[in-house]
Length: 453
Image (tube, rainbow, N blue to C red):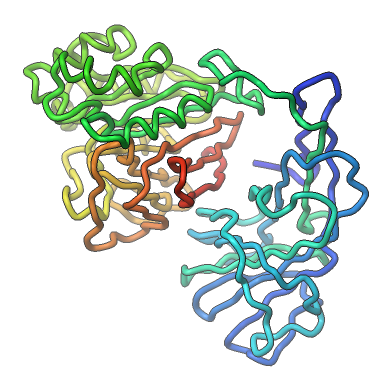
């Protein structure tokens, strides 16, 4: 968890070091449709909610920068009161209005939240710091407004600029304009120095989607994961060579895959195991684990028995018991939680999720439905659990044709069914950032951060 004293200092490419400047708001407030004529400009709290509807506004004045902006992050702190926590921290957007009055704004005369979406925060806990990337908005000296909304009826409460040490902060990183650099390779460290895990599932066929997502991997360093159905339609050696190899195959050396049902259309998934070799774990088994920094990562096989007491479930519990890492992420193909119209939730995977939950795992990533979806932290039966729950993602947008959504399941927080992309995790010592990175030419994105259990 971040503390009030945390400030990242980044290093720029070249001989000169980057610098960070911290700004506090020159104005912040919120509005409430339950008290439409009330101004909350002097409140120590900022609220965002959907029942009653609350929207919050922040304005920063950035000055004194002499180098180009290379990054900007908004840091906000949840209030230390009962009810400040929420399954949804809000959607942060740019605003064109930069002259609204902190002590004059009410619901009745509020400024429009009319700019681009900067980021969406997932679950937020009480008395904790969170970061939002606002680099798209803050491009240099000037005045910038940010508006925050929520579609969740269980809203979040943050500390305002009247909150002293826990007031919002805008941290702007500047440095010399970067020199042209070669395309990153698997050995290029991520800018933060923390491990990166990036990937998707449902990948390679005769279309162009996998070409688009492979191009994204060309620019993202780190370990690549897959959530199954690596190649269509039958996982044959010929299909791996014809479809997967020319695209995602150029990243095979740094890929740690999981198998899907299409990979098993070839008996014993021999095409899959033969293509990936040792990177897929013990041949024919399909489940294995590895460590990245402070994280234990587990690739599982939802195409063989997962029942309580099965060989895989017993192995998983022993593997988790032996791990000394404080944070855990797992991935496999068939989703326990999904709103996809094509494939229903795979309840047979619940014993794996239960084992991970019992050992305080943090993240699970699925595939199978060809779309993106993010869930709030949940227990194995799908109940919201902001204390010990595992945050689940469906990352089936690797290249195969898109699927639609059906009935939206409880605790589903973000969804997309028309954009190919990859899901990137930056694995910090005791927290993680997630980011949906869209294919070129598309604008959908989803990002956020959580602490480990």
